Image (cartoon, rainbow, N blue to C red; front, side):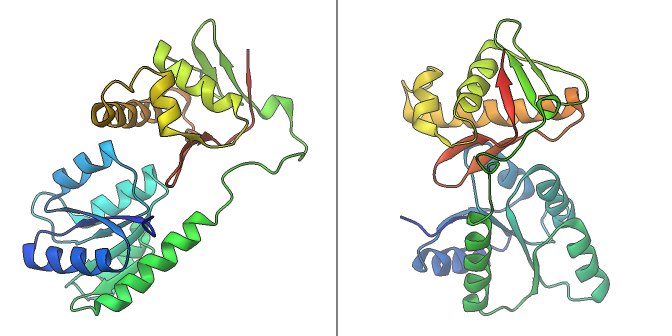
Length: 238
């Protein structure tokens, strides 16, 4: 099993191939993208543990990519760039980078940083401690008849039937992860494995965006690396 899943945004083809080869030899699953567009398209169909981002991408500033990742995902983020001014470094960290490395960089140092991030992210608690006291009013509520998700405070989110069923499955497991295979089967995405995995990922991305926009809160739908998804906040079914 790979040590972690990595995506690299780098428009220098030779540099990208070198990084991918070295990280692959160190037992990481690696995907490469030559532009911000390719990078974000790759995120739709897959989950990654760590992103390595070059600042000088041809179609979008790497700083913007880092900022978007930090706002929308739980990924570890490493900036790898030739820009070595203190202002650029400060901006990288302000945008949300975990590490800011300048080129040329010894691949061993990058692999060590990637491995450390994967290990750290994998050890974070994703679910509430069982038996801990909870406030009923602080729970999310899923109405399976009206297809509505209501947060502890804020506006409700109106769901499609498939979105409602996805959340029903997650909430029923009380914070435990549900595998992608189980979700694909229960949501009728299992007919074509490749299409099903992509369709599930797109649905989750759109659902997170909907919850964020309609409730004003960050959606508690967590990606569990190498497993599936969980609903990481206290919740009940109506």
